[in-house]
Amino acid sequence: MITLYHRAKTRATRIIFLLEELEAPYQIHSVTTRNRDGSGAADPANPHPHGKVPAISDDGVVVFESPAIALYLTDKFPNQRLGPLVGDPARGAYLSWLAYYSGVFEPAIMSKFMKVEVPRGTAGWVALEEVLPAVMQRLAPGPYLLGERFSALDVIYGTAFAQLAQLLPKSPLLEEYVQRVVTRPAYTRALAKDGG
Image (cartoon, rainbow, N blue to C red; front, side, top):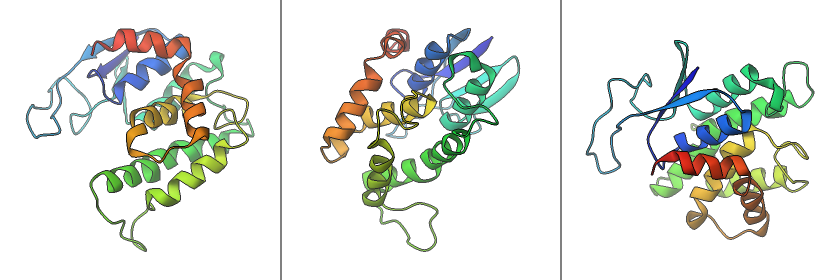
């Protein structure tokens, strides 16, 4: 049984979406986290090293951070084909874009949101103005990041774009992509279970 350590209306909601898409058995364990304003506290029951969400436990195997959770779950539950397996030619793109999310995409978003200039030459990420064209180029052939195949990448990126819509420049390509992702029945079920 998968236990998802969760707080409503956070990145953990996307993992409910993924679990629903995978038709995986899971339970939600709500935890407290620190708030943006500094209030609140990390829940000692949460296995994430910084008390953040999402994190999962699979019969004692702990995995945290959305891309790592996506990889773990899509490998564990291959029947829904939400992540290319070892030997699949799409595996390289899948792994690359999972890593890109946490290594480049999120830092670029946070740099922009916090109005911090990306330290060129030393940072492992680039400015959002360079990230968005790269992601949009990948999406242009569509309809999903792996082409015709909906995957855990779309769970992660699609929900991020949906959450960040007000911070990003208007783009019909991104808006249509987000709509393809958030109109999936598993997304609707995830929101109902989010508890927020």
